[in-house]
Length: 139
Picture (cartoon, rainbow, N blue to C red):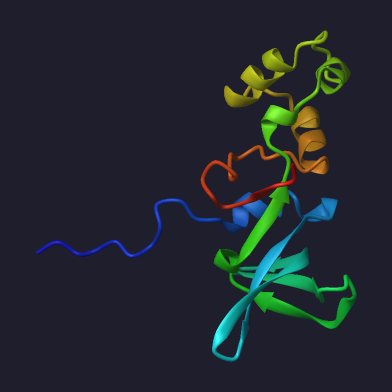
């Protein structure tokens, strides 16, 4: 007898988010209000095993008085797609005016660590989460 696989093939993991944590990652959280969910703007503040700690904002941009804990499935980070890489950034990394060459290095996982960290600081989607429907594009 076959069992049904109920979890999605792609899911947002703590590992995908933890590396962005020091760099002020923003996103959208699905918050349960009684019998319905509402999507609201939020900042990722912390991670605890399988729970995310987020600071939420009301529709006017005012911070809530308290932080809340949500599951990773209820959070979508706001990230820049790698297609938004610039020639200036490529040059900063030592690749003369070639964002396409830089993109190929990233895709082949050959980017030096210091450059990888810079992409995280700038909130680039280094794990292709946007393509998997697990993140929201900033553009």
